[in-house]
Length: 310
Length: 310
Image (cartoon, rainbow over all chains, first blue to last red):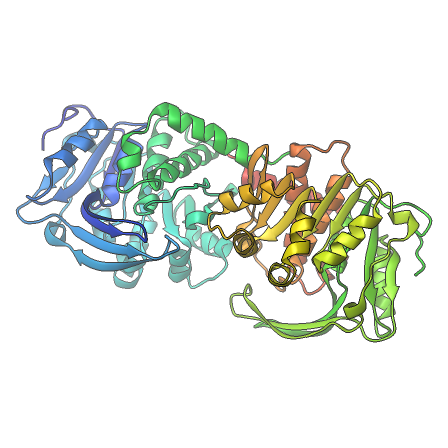
């Protein structure tokens, strides 16, 4: 697939799903929105770094959505277009806007997805393995030459259905991101500090346990990092918040000169800020009208909320 | 009631319940433990300030528990002893160690409690109105001459049964502490930022919304302060965590030279640290063997967990 960045090597490779989402909240219903983990993650990362997308869409994928990716400067050389229909998901959020029910999942072209990295992606120093089957995440990892930092996101489905490849994957990444329920399911432990400590033993340098509206906790050899979520007043669609968080994190980290604990922490802060914008509107709508100044202002605002006094 | 501090004015006055608690967790059952909001709050505050207790006990109240208060240097002149039995509560914690069921509540001497402040308490600059009926909290407030800072804690029971006096109380305090469910119940709003903003309109300068294991959020004219909970690995008994948090907060604040946003924030940090120690054992057991050095070490440790990177 053509791209204005086709010839330039990327800083961050992101793999994941591209989906057409139909979402219902207690307040509104929207159809065939641009969604999927790689859409949210790439757009969020693109605010800070040059990003290459790896994914698959069908013949029904709207050209306007491709234009949206390109408008963010995302390299879509690694986005395959296959015969058939694009992955489609529909779900309903409950009154609390947190719990949701899946109404339908149509894998469509995603069922036969075999991610292939274009040459310009293979030397990417930063890699985000978005939430897809661990086998596919490993397959992408095999195609990157010497990545500096690899992040993997996962979900409960793979803990149930692909435990062995997931365990192999965890042993090969620098950072594992997962939510609190998944951390408990994966380790069989309840206390999240203990979950994090156990997961560190499996290989990663960093484990980030996400707790939705309650923020996240990072466990590493340097200790814990406790990060509240940026508190928003207008929640419209929580879909993709975790992917936005992960994408902005990796994009921000890739833009820094140093790769140490302080850089990782600041990048997580930035991930939380981008996620807080993302959920203020459906799909990528809020990120589409976001400026660097909006981000900087909210980052300053967020830091003031976290200052621990004296 | 006699006290080694009977003649010296106190820095902090704390009113609340004294109870004999019978507590069952999935792991252990303990009977007639020292409990009640004023026990936890006074002991926690006593690490930082000279504290005067206001409460009531019955003839069955063990002398060893009085000795425990005195061992912390707490002035118990304001602790009444009445004919009859001490307030008694029993409850069972569920497997998650968060949700609990009350098995029995015997008000006993607490039913006719009329708090009276000894003369040495009336010029106290700091006042913590622990969780009792708002009428009693107001009655205590009426007896303090010119307090510098008044904190009130409340609970869902009073929102249902004493809405008017509670509203009057909220209009007369500097800080209101309550948990997330109570903030929603009291304001009829769901979003916690909006709850906090609404409650500020009722009078207090600060509203602290407690979220248990997820920490707390302070709303004030200076903006928001987001404070995660110190993550503990060994939770044995969550009873009294909120009272310990409030008590340590007020005690710490009273020990400072300045009373500003930074001082308030650091004191909340300290409240979270004391609460994290408190729940590591039943009743006041963990606080009883705690040193200033333990507290300082955990405060340093906690700050490192909150540092937001660069």
